[in-house]
Image 1: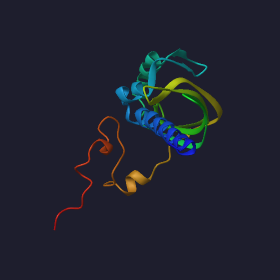
Image 2 (image 1 turned 135 degrees about the vertical axis):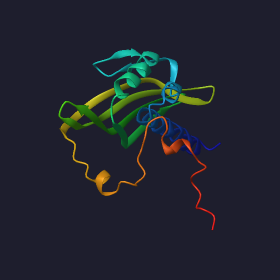
Image 3 (image 1 turned 90 degrees about the vertical axis):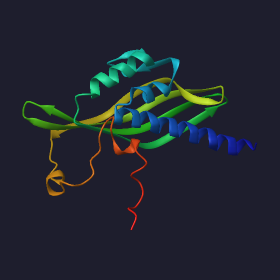
Length: 172
């Protein structure tokens, strides 16, 4: 296969890996999050430095009491070096957290600095770190839900994402 075409395919595989990581956090999908790492992977977020297995458990515990989360990806730069690659992935992570006074919106923005490997033709994380560039915490302001009470809302383990039977127009 043409080298440039293979490079594009590899970068797309890594990009989708990054997207699945974000989905796993937002949907509290422990099995999916675990599947993005090789077993010997390491995570360094500063406040936690641990194996990917322990990090996955940490994430599920840390996010389970949040009312909502949304992790967005921005710039993604991937430097391929054979079966190894290095990435810089910009992100913004939103967390809706219950407090004694109601809810707070916490936004954290920064970059993931990653190392990926391809083993048996599959790309996964072998190292992931999170560098925080800025954050903001403020009282929640979400009148939308009151204005549109029948709107479809995102969820966790039972999010509409996990259904496909509902993605057809009703029969006439």
